[in-house]
Image 1 (cartoon, rainbow, N blue to C red):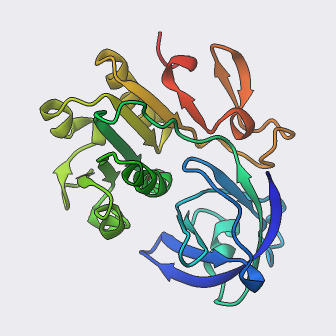
Image 2: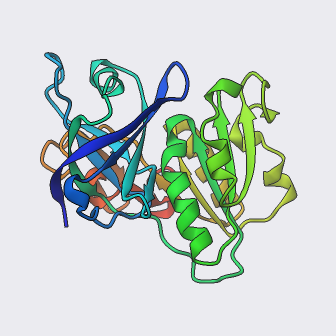
Image 3: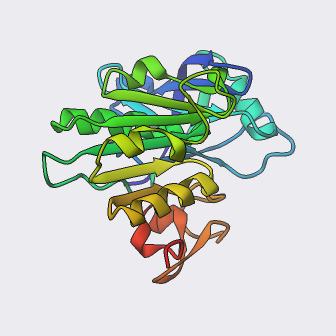
Length: 259
């Protein structure tokens, strides 16, 4: 059930020049609503004269022991810049949880690859934890422009094997995620991916060619989060659908990306 909540900032950690990790909890030790990997929240931006709409942010992680929600945020415009200035103890208003989630594999012997690019790595951390808790051994393939843009590697390593690519070759294998040698050296039954659309389309094409089950988490502009503004409409084989309500997770067979 969707809720509008005032959450309290417990940590605000700057990870590099463009990314920060915001950790939030409820007042009075109230339990956070259940959130699923792949879902997102809409964050109200206060103290900004130019930001009128909420900002959609993926659920990065839910720490049930600390009752904390983690949001990995990339500073792009004034809205996310204002969020980056949040101080411990401040209140942030969120609408959550929104959207659907990734599909749990049915076969425990499934070989799983979770691919994230840029801020699209965010939903893969929580999904990796859920998969490990369910008895799977996920593999992570994380792509970035350079070594300084590879984020939360220590956290990812708690839940599976981590492979990386960077465009400049400063960490991992040089190139894009679709060039990584693991795709030639290991057979996968399921791929889950989130990141820039060209990256996801390339991953979808690879998965289709290899007959691998594949789900993508789209990053269309989602201004409202509940299907009213129509900013996030995606053309699918089932017609034009709102990503915020019918997604953000889609099976590639339902999209028009694959002929």
